[in-house]
Image 1 (cartoon, one colour):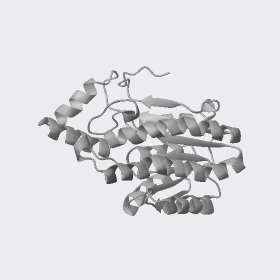
Image 2 (spheres, helix red, strand yellow):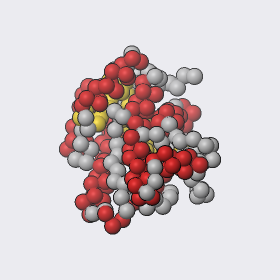
Image 3 (cartoon, rainbow, N blue to C red):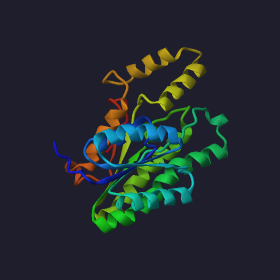
Image 4 (cartoon, rainbow, N blue to C red):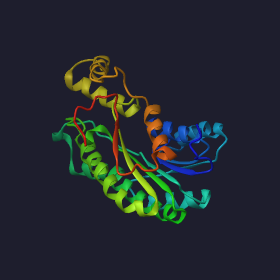
Amino acid sequence: MDFQLQEKVALVTGGSRGIGRAIALTLASQGMHIAICGRTQETLDSTAADIQKHKVKVWTFQTDVSQLTELEHLVNNTLHAAGQIDVLVNNAVTSTSAPFNELTDDLFRYHIDVKLMAYIRLARLVLTPMRAAGWGRVINIGGMTARIVAPLRITNGVVNAGIANFSKQFSSYAAQHQVTVNCIHPGYTVTERVMQLFSREAEEANTSIESIIAKRTEEIPLGKLVQPDDIAAAVLFFCSPMANMITGQSIAVDGGSGEAVMY
């Protein structure tokens, strides 16, 4: 299938590992040139080498997304190198697996800056080149804690709920420029961060991580954990012509584990 994405440029934050890496590789497989940012240059370089196997251009930027000036440099450097930004995938995340009594003001502020504010700031920054092109896609990755109560992921819940709301609000403004904005809520996805969460849950319950993984898997109607490639497939759909008239939506990729009825 031709997704009509050849020669377009995607900027993927947190693109060097986990879900972001899978997204970058999937978009590259469709002929998109890729800019990725992350915290560790070694990991960025490793992912870039895999992206280049798809015979596309790739740029890496070591970035602290909690800082506005670094986000401005990220966008400006991407535009200087690639000449355009057609797709923004906001994916960078931090996470603190802890109960409420362990969460300080600084932890809340940092998580808000790394995820919610970084998403907002980058959406604002990329809208200018997208508006000039008359086409664009903004896809925000915000976990299922936007919809559920998770005692060890309270900071995640606060920012993910904000991301879902911002995605809807921003979509109305961006639509006049033919830019769509959508949000994806990953369920329990096999990443380093989720394994750390399972480890903390096992510690709290005085049990093994294997038992926690088995318990979480049982809660998923499809009977298996989400893979990063499952999230990447949803991103590809939102980038494609099949989603030309879809904007302002939040979709869960969770194997059916979310129990809330969403309208």
